[in-house]
Length: 214
Image 1 (cartoon, rainbow, N blue to C red):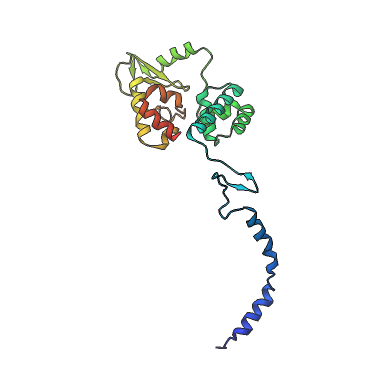
Image 2 (image 1 turned 90 degrees about the vertical axis):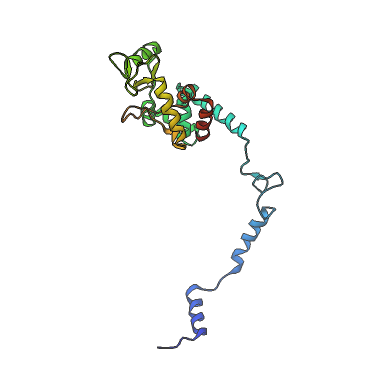
């Protein structure tokens, strides 16, 4: 086996890659110095570069207030329920501009994609239909098979008793973050349960946990 000479090996490397010009890296040092500090944060704890603020940390109250404003904006511009606006904002990473554009371009398709159905204008007729759907003769809930005095359904029209809804929703909250994507109890139904439905039918403690995941 032929022996390799160290000097020859390094000479070959220099021929292959060429000489390194360390002056090319001088601009990098200048850029680093422009930060004014080694960690890139100013005395207020805000990330900055040459006096320009990149971001700031918001308090929880400020975040909630910003969310409420965006929900109201979507509700007014797109003429959809606040609960629907909240779902769309969450699914689109709270980008209100994206939500507005999607709704204006294809309102029905966008709502359907995320499991949202707007009920008809005559709410009383919708409620009457809800009382009929999901029942058998004798007025029994199709989940618990007991007589139901109070019942309701989502936009899809599948109607079940209040007790079954409450147990179903509270169980989904106990399951964790996936509760924000809870759908109607009917088999294969893709209608999404909104925060408004959760708020009306679960305990305050359970609802707070749901909103934590939301």
